[in-house]
Image 1 (cartoon, rainbow, N blue to C red):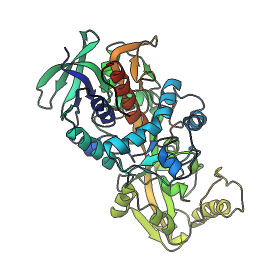
Image 2 (image 1 turned 90 degrees about the vertical axis):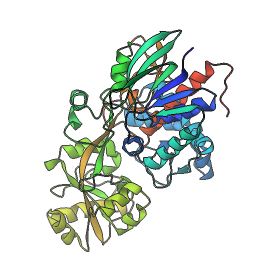
Image 3 (image 1 turned 45 degrees about the vertical axis):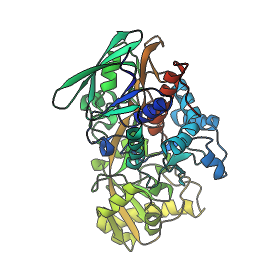
Image 4 (image 1 turned 90 degrees about the horizontal axis):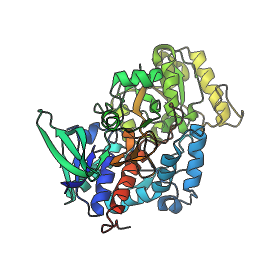
Length: 459
């Protein structure tokens, strides 16, 4: 008999799978390589955004939504390139997932009051502070409280081998080199993507390879190596989430909520270079191609006040990264750009905000309000947050071979698996990193539990 029902490699979004499996009465071991994963994992570094189309939180807010409407947005953003099985299963699981996070895990889930690029309605759910560390803390505490989950931290999954009857023998390694083995009915690879491996990034993501990496240092492609060794197929390795809003001074995120509230982005010479509302992911590569690969988010006091609810933004403020000025010429002097150029860019966006123009010269059609003094600017650099391609999986998160056949008892989620963002950076929608991290792990646990007829997961 195997030692445990499920071995989860990765204590980020994979904890959703561990908790869901434990809820069904299964015994779980979670192995996490990063001793500081509570603050250093991709889940912890996220903005805790999870799309949940059709949730009770949306209904309470009077918002009509559905998995089909979400899939239409995904298809539009990815130009039809999203993996249909993965996108479909995640669109359907989003609402049950966020409600389960509230009801079973006990997280204070709420509907974010922000209109994110590409989402037809407000469907992104989060927690107070809009920071992944709070979400992960709730998952970890729930796992620690479960009698059916053992957390091994730090311990890295370094080898897999079939153990007969569909089970797996796994080898775990501690930082001091000590190793231990156990057998598991199933293994969930939730180790993240490959963003921390410069060689893999240069090979698959050359357009963003020179940008800062703002993700887990342990996301080095473990799942790709482990899965490929057993014949697993890979998919969409060119997909990633970038971000154009990493504060150059604070090295934390200037949330794109500032842009959706009316902020504009200029390059190091003071020129705008694209419609900021298309999405922060593809904007990273655009910023990387500008002079010096740096720019500025220009906002005002209204936007600053409205964004204080985001912990990342407060860190930017506390780091002294905002440069304030009472006039546009004063602001231009503070950030080293031509005052006439900057004034022209702000006037152009303001014309759209006031209804005097339908579209500005960079193609932006929506500006929430014209910027008013006092003004502020934050210097930004482009960043790679995490990769969006990985092992090919089906609707149950089962790893597949090149012929599309499931590899018995091997699952993948999050950055370890193919996501729902198609190819490149332009297909990324807010929340479409965390949804596969939590949602595929949740689906894997459900599938594993269904294989144990005597163990049913409560609603």
